[in-house]
Image 1 (tube, protein in one colour):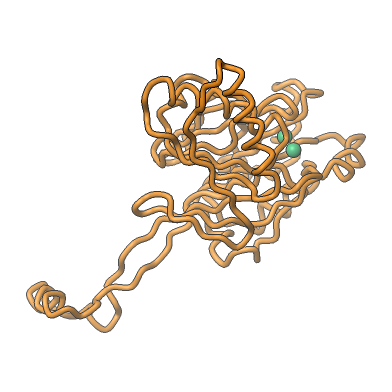
Image 2 (cartoon, rainbow, N blue to C red):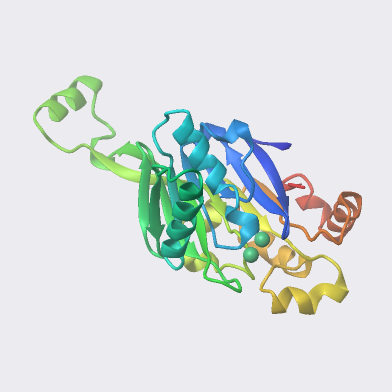
Amino acid sequence: MTLLQCGNWILEGKSSSAVATYIRIKELDLIFDLGRCPMRFIGTNHIFISHFHLDHYFGLPIYISQRWLAGMPPGNIFVPQNGHKQLRNILNKISSLDRGKEWGYQLTPVEVGDTIHFRQNLVAHILPGNHSVPAVSFLICEIRKKLKPEYRNLSEREIVALKQSGVEITNEVQLPLVAYLGDTRGISVDSHPLLKKCKLLICECTFITPEHRERAKRTKHLHLDMIPILLEEFESEHIVLNHFSRRYTPEFIRHEIYKRLPTSEHLRVKLLL
Ligand SMILES: [Zn+2]
Ligand SMILES: [Zn+2]
């Protein structure tokens, strides 16, 4: 299990193309993709699945059955609309193999354009993916109440009085926290007005050498060639690259990426291997 510190968050997980990708941010009580399910992930309550390639959802039966066995309430699993019925069938068949048991689980299909309120102060915006199968990306935002500008010069007592009289004194604002792109050939920063301002961007970079440019295009993955433009577009404090091909060793990946990226980007770019 790799641990990566990104500001106040610790990313836990693994990511290797075609093997498994699973990334938890415990502080936000969520997991992006679940290609495998380590036991320490069972207690996390929100799972966001980007697409139905096995390396991104194969851990779901373990997650669901372990919670069911432990008598925990089902976690909230968000999956692409396209394919969610087949997934339900698969999960039901697996559970019925276990002497006809029926696991309780909570599956919510999502589509591009949806906004999911999944915790008191957190929302997930569903953004497009661009992959060989239907895929989505996720932008997680925190909702904060902000005093309306016209009340900013009032005293505390005046504000309390207004509030008590039933006047709405705050606006809701959204703070973009994390974007997770899943497997994709890229994303337009115009997909959401807050996307480029997310604090943390988790982005695939499956292929890195010149001879794999064509393969990256054909299988709809990002190539290292495309990362510098993406870095220019995003204002994120932390950028985590993941989902590297098994053709490369971790040492080779590290060496090639930091050789290729400008030195000014070395601090904010981290690798999840
Ligand atoms: Zn993958
Ligand atoms: Zn994929």
